[in-house]
Length: 146
Image (cartoon, rainbow, N blue to C red):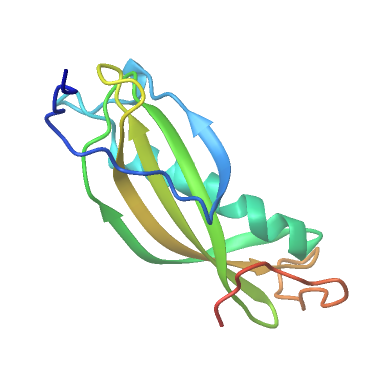
């Protein structure tokens, strides 16, 4: 007996990225069309993007750039969103991170579709909000592309 075909090919989740956040959008997060606001998704991506740099900055940091942000598919109420991240660049005061977001649709559990991808840059800051050097001792980032 053959397996029934699914209407959408299954998207594999990244194996070489770290899962840094999972969240389910709620009705209060929707726009007039019933889809989740892009700004809400952007805020979640910013939170997810900050997880890995926080390990290296060892103190305060701020988002200084959204280098790229692509909405590939709409996000819907009840989707289970998984945010995967990896560091792509470490400078003297800044770290750039790639974030990929996958939705496990409420109506299709176990199947994933990439809904968003983004590149963000964070800068280490001191108490006055001025850029400061990222500590280099013990700095090892697996798979870093620089």
